[in-house]
Amino acid sequence: MINVTKTYLPDFEEYSAYLRKIWETGHITNHGPLVTELEERITEFMGAEFLSLVNNGTIALQIAVKALDLQGEIIVTPFSYVASVSSIVWSGCTPVFVDIDPNSLTIDPAQIENAITPETSAILATHVFAK
Image (cartoon, rainbow, N blue to C red; front, side, top):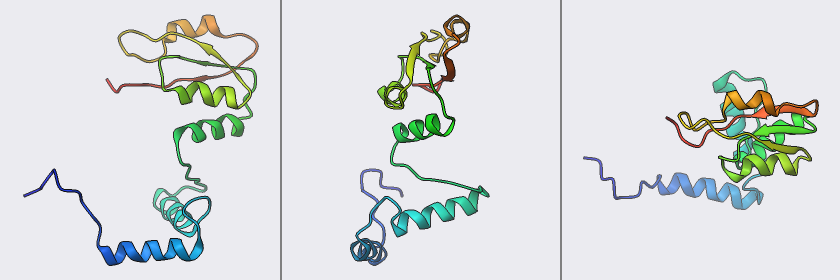
């Protein structure tokens, strides 16, 4: 029987060993040994050449904008989480809003072409709901 109202807790001794390691190093994130170990294990499992863990989607979007050296305008829908637009603005780019398709609830491809200008460097297509 699976008790859905009881919290699953890991083995206390195993969990304590992780906590001890954190206290000894003083690192929880930002290149701490556990983060580094997880990155290495995921990289190996995925067969990837490089991998970097980040703490949230906002940072991931900002890294993508910087890594792609995007400048100028980025087309995005306002019907998204605030991080979509914040990442664009915080990266020094300008968001250009395109409405959503009412059936798919994603950025409307039919409206994107009219929003493209010589300053457009990317289209950030996000979704709020899986449909």
